[in-house]
Amino acid sequence: MPKSKNESPVSKWKPASAEWVRVFGEAVGGLSGAEQRKMFGYPAAFVNGNMFAGLHENGLVLRLPDPDREALLKLPGAKPFEPMPGRPMREYVVAPSAFMTSPAEVKAWLRKSLAYGSSLPPKRASRKEAKAR
Image 1 (tube, rainbow, N blue to C red):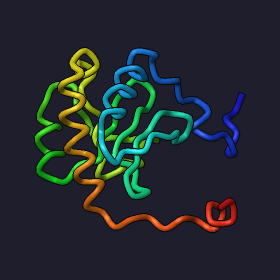
Image 2 (cartoon, rainbow, N blue to C red; image 1 turned 120 degrees about the horizontal axis):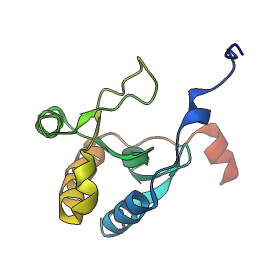
Image 3 (cartoon, helix red, strand yellow; image 1 turned 60 degrees about the vertical axis):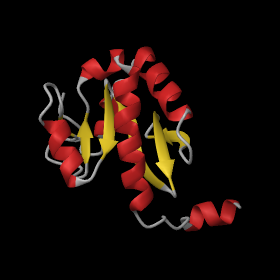
């Protein structure tokens, strides 16, 4: 059957594992200034309206400045975040899956990601969000 042009790649994404959801929630819960909410159905963390980390399928996604991003990409299993083929998100990296068993490592990288997100200009509320208030 031919693929529909209207079929979204989002519909093919798998849910994050329960273990990643637990590890991520515990790590983000201890970060001052971080707001937890969902992005495309996945747990995510925001600061000043900017997403700085989240889960996607079976991985932890971190938004980092160039030096930290380059350092993380040198670790085995880390890779650029490309939610759709050919559409990489330039400031984001998928952390190695081994991080799931190291909450201290997750928290350390989340702190770096939070610091970077905090340095970005605050996002303004969309018209939809402003009307809801």
